[in-house]
Each structure stands twice: as structure tokens, then as C-alpha cells.
Length: 146
Image 1 (cartoon, helix red, strand yellow):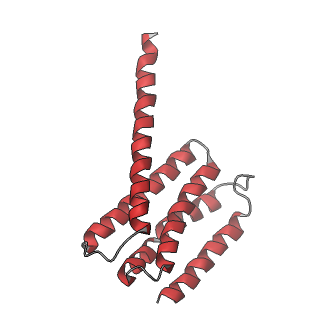
Image 2: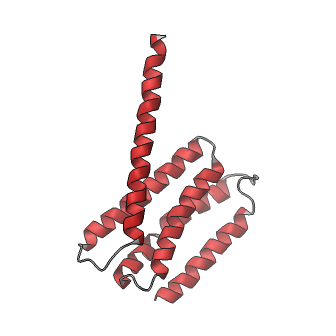
Image 3: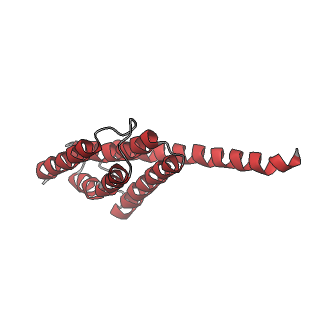
């Protein structure tokens, strides 16, 4: 019976880390969405943006390792859509919108990687169309922003 204790402790530790990671991800997401015209330093804003993207990519990677392709795609799309919607919000400061636009490539490239590296499955239908749609959306948004 005692041989299972380290495994149980590992599972509990992993669940705790994932819970903390999810909580931090949600907190950062709200910071990005509700960004105000504060005088916060650009470097601090960029650090929050990087941390948000890193956590999102890590959770997508964890889902991929567990062969949960739909969940992996959903994490990446969540990060992508949060950044995209922020760039479209004309009430946000332009430097913040531009920074979010510059970072959109990270979740987009990760989505491209999973779409092109995995075979067509019911979990990821029409991958090529989805990818083309994301690139078109990014292109239109870039023209709108600049």
C-alpha cells in the first residue's frame, strides 16, 4: 500500500500546480481583456503578456501529451482569440493593441503546428480551412489596426 503513496502525492501535486496555473492564467487573461489606460510600464505589460501566452502554450502542450487534441486546440484558440479581440478594441490604448497584435503569432504558429503535424481526425476537422481562416483574419486585423 505504501508504494502508491508517492504516486498519489505526485497526482495531488500535479493537480495543485494545474489549479494554480489555471488560476494565474485566468487572472492574466482578465488583466489583458480589462487593460486600462494605466501608466504601468511597457516592460511590466509585456511580462504579463508573455506569462499569459507561456501558460496557455504550456496547458496546450499538456493536453497534447495526454492526446486531448480538441482541448489542445481550444487552449491555443483561447489565447489567440483573447489577443485578437484585444487588438480590435478601440477603447484600449493603441500601444497595448499593437503589442497584442505582435504576439498573436505565437498561438497562431502553435495552431499551425498541430494542424499540419496531426492527421485529420474528428477532433480536428477541416484543419487546412481553419488555418487559412486564422491567417486571413490576422491579415484583415493587421490592416485595420495600422
